[in-house]
Amino acid sequence: MYRIGQGIDFHQMVEGRDFWLGGVLIPSPKGALGHSDADVLLHAVCDALLGALALGDIGQHFPDTDAAYKGIDSKILLKKCGELVASKGYAPVNVDATVLLEAPKIKKYGPDMRATMAAVLNMSPNDISIKATTTEQMGFVGKGEGIVAMANVLLRQLG
Image 1 (cartoon, rainbow, N blue to C red):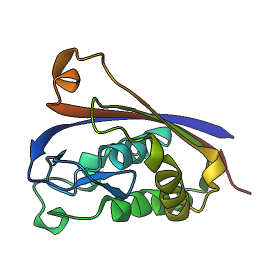
Image 2 (image 1 turned 90 degrees about the vertical axis):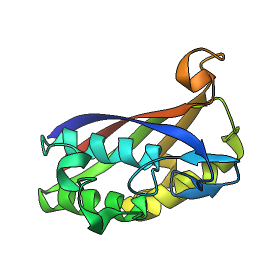
Image 3 (image 1 turned 45 degrees about the horizontal axis):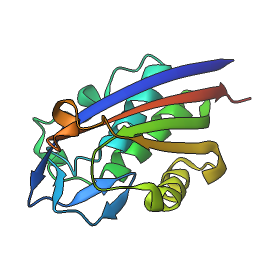
């Protein structure tokens, strides 16, 4: 049996924060604002994994009201989501994600992001797609005020 999940996440971009995306620290004058490291891409993938098995969302599992998750590395959250999926007898087949961001350009970080995510989820980087687009300077993304990531995952039942 196969299950499909979709996730989406939004964060403000602000001065003075590290910019983590796909588990990779990217040089940028702005970073995403959030309770954790605010890795919008990993959060979207977490939601897609959880959604595929009707397990709720990232906020239910890792609430921003819990001090235990303050500043947490989102790779840890992704690992926990992957472990939860595995405990239900499923494994990811592939991840397809899109990041909406005006700046910085992230294309050259794609291989590192794919490798990082693959290592956390015990997948091949060849099964992870990360695309990026701008909003042509429209809306909060186009003005550099925020970032959005969307992800779809396909899970297969093991055994």
